[in-house]
Each structure stands twice: as C-alpha cells, then as structure tokens.
Image 1 (tube, rainbow, N blue to C red):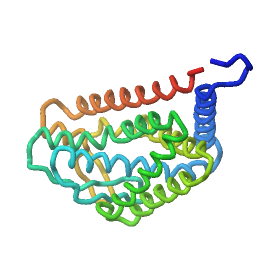
Image 2 (image 1 turned 120 degrees about the vertical axis):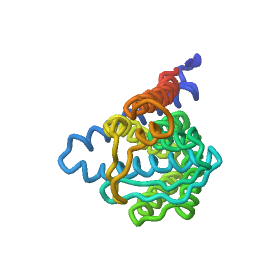
Image 3 (image 1 turned 180 degrees about the vertical axis):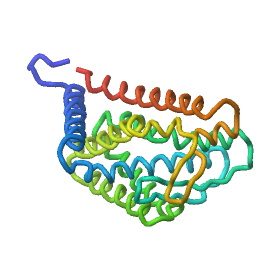
Length: 245
C-alpha cells in the first residue's frame, strides 16, 4: 500500500528492488549466452554448478550418518565426491541423488533468502564462512580449491559492500545460474555412465538403480522432477515477494 502522501511503503521498496535484481540477473545471463566470448565468463559458473553438485553428494552422506571424505573438481567441469556409508541401499541411493538435486535445492534456498537484501547479505556471510570450512575439510583438487575459494572470496567481498542490494543481486544471480544448470546439464540425469577427470564410472542415476530397483532413466526422471519442483517453489516464493505491493 501507498500512504496518503504518496510515499511508498518499505514493502513496496523491497518488492521493487527484488524485481530489479531479477531483471538484472536475467540480462547478464542472456549476455553470457549471446555475446561472443561470453562462454569464457560463464565457464567459472559451470564449475560452480559442478562444485555444488558434488557438495550435494557429500552433504547427503553426512545427512544419512555417513562420511564425506573428499571432493574434486576438474578443468573439464567434471567432478567426483568420495563418500562412505554403512552400506544400506537407501543411504547409497540418497547420497547418489543428493548430487543430482543439489544445484536445484541450492538455487531454491538462494531465491528464498534473496527475497530481501538484508537476508541475502547474511546468507553470503554465513555461506562464505561455511565455504572456507568445506574447502579445508573436503576439497582436494587445485581446480576445486580455485572454484571454492573464488566463490567464497567474491561472496564475502560483496557481502561487505555497504549497500545490501549488491548482496541480493549476487545471490539471485548465482541462484539463476544454478537453476539454469538443472536444464543445461539435464542430459546427465538419463546417462548410465560418467566420464570425469578421475576416470570412467557409473552415473549417479545408475548408482541409484544399482542400490534400489527400476532402470537408471526412471531415477533420473524422479530426480529431475524433484529438482524442478524445488526450483519452482523457490522461484515462486521470490516472484511472489517481488510482486508484492
């Protein structure tokens, strides 16, 4: 609502800022796709999605009571996460699926926290500290360290800028990129094998099929639906806040 004097309410100011942030993120993303050489700038963002994917495996392992041993990201944008569980089939399936849905869940969290600039800044500060811890505990490759520490450095630097809107812009921009990776790298959901810098192995969908029942493409579809649902919910929350007047 607008008061009798025509002055915008704080809610309206936040909503307008949220709309502007989303528009700016979309414009920058489109530029990366359309401008010649934009893929060179986009390459680090692809590595970030790989890092988040592998973190999804590791965090899922911790969630089921297992161990997160190490994480590696390679220059070809592939990665591996070494984990250990007690051998239970459900636990193995959860760990394998954690990577597949990780980017979408991270994007949903980013959209949710990015609804206000203050929450976005707090998210970047906490995320930056947690990123440093993750780098020390689990990252074990040069590219992985460059990606993790680069992401941490930029996020903390942006969070320390006096104007909160820059934190909101960076968090929403990252969320948009992770959300797009769900679709741009969606073919992996239905692959039976994976080629990474560590060698050739079974895909995550195939690992779920090995632990449970049904073919790998079925589980790829299930993880895809979960990813779309999580991403859609986070985007809906953000857009609802941006539309609030």
